[in-house]
Length: 476
Image 1: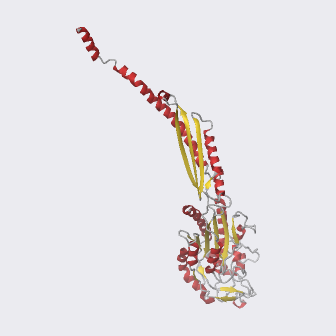
Image 2: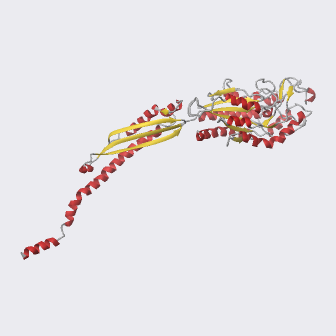
Image 3: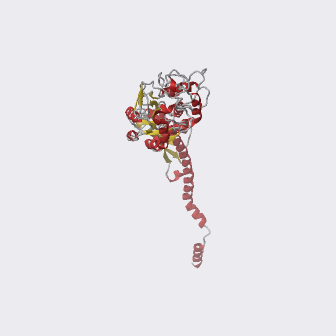
């Protein structure tokens, strides 16, 4: 009995087999944990492939010129874009083609247009077979996820170009060009002994009196005609003078604006994301404003084809006030008529979300000097001393939601002012400092631009266009 009790006590104190016992007890959960990590890692790799495919699909569904994108731009309202859904699923399935390691894959997509916003979402789910987790009763792991993308649709914008073609826009475009014209222009020589720099003199016979001319012109004013040939009798008269300093012509400010509009048309054409995204129209004004070339989305024509807006822009200077265009009228710069007429031409103000819901912009290109006189057939009326514009008509248009952009072409101080015509030269030179703040008040915020040289005019008009694109997306 004593020996038996000693053996029992020794057995009770002996610990040499504990590790094996504990290991045996812990082996199952340990293997389960390792198996979980292996199976989970496999499932994670499969999900990563699925997520990458979903990301690619949601982005592709909104890509420019994708089926969904093009379909959305053609929609006139909001809603689901079926072509985008199909495209998203095709991209998703194409990216997963040939991939293995999963079963029971399901996927769905939504592509929705809301105004100018386009959104896509791709959702997926799949089952990944397991190996080790079967020990604790799992046969598969379910993985799932989604990918969302958003983009802005190209906005449909209308640009109404209000182009000042009154007499002051017939001034040469630079001081150097003024000097060139003054050297050859015989107009009103008794009052302009240093040479008249207005090129916009009236074309009717009798508008200039031979007794005032440097030499006989048969009572015609010849400044505008001379600008078309640079005074060289062997030059073929031009209708457009895109470059200052050329021997073919003397560039007038209206020429510089016309060239800038041509470049704007090129910019708009290259910027458009979809067909017919931009419409542009040319609306010159003197006494009256009219549709010289109404809104058109055909802006990629040739400047030598008389049926295109490109040709109309190139030949803008032909509309300068020579007293010959009854549609424009003659004799002054009448913003008080031009703005109400423009307001009537803009029949609706949309959001830009579709081709039939366009967002309008008015681009005013002017030197900003208002002149209330009128003339026809030699009969003059009204005060010919220039002043600044009344901004209340601008406010009327802006209150409708139309953005007004102003390109101010500073009045170059007349180099040889005289007392001719009720001191009009001195009156103009006196108001020059007051013009910019008035035009800035007419413009919408951040839409006032200034251009001093022909190159500046081109750059500023393009900057106005680019600012319009940015602002349209921010506000809409």
